Image (cartoon, rainbow, N blue to C red):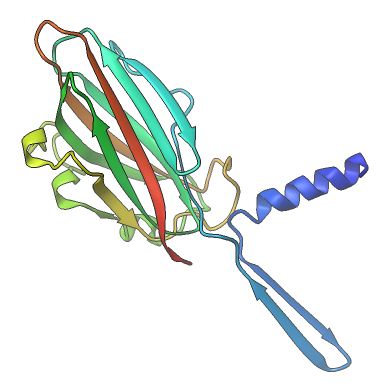
Length: 208
């Protein structure tokens, strides 16, 4: 395969990530229409410049999973803001899993949602459903904090669900995603270092 052909093959693979396929051919008065779709895809990631003061953060993103390992020595309740990037070509839901033996979850809230560009569906924000106990959009960040005692941390927590986000583009397009900002407040034990594993998982709930 020459260089020119290889370039166009890669471009085609990237474009069909989110764009439905329709082909119509007509010959001698006969019309034949072929329709196809790509697989449902939900992709989660974090911006490359995400930083957190006084907290050590290791992040691994893979497809529909973002896993964060948070640790620190500051015994005041640390506040972490996570700008979660969501792309999908179908309806989706996002769940969170919190694992720690050295700190408690004091708050988990969705505080802001915004579109990153023109390839975001108009219904992506209006149709977004945040689980009531996690929805703090437009409120003071410290108000009505969801405490660990009010949450069942033995299983994944459904944080939000919504309709299709992306109208086109690829997994790297800058203008086809939602940025969902989550606020997480941990309560470390006095006099001890702490470590928390925080995992966000996205899954498709319907196609187109």
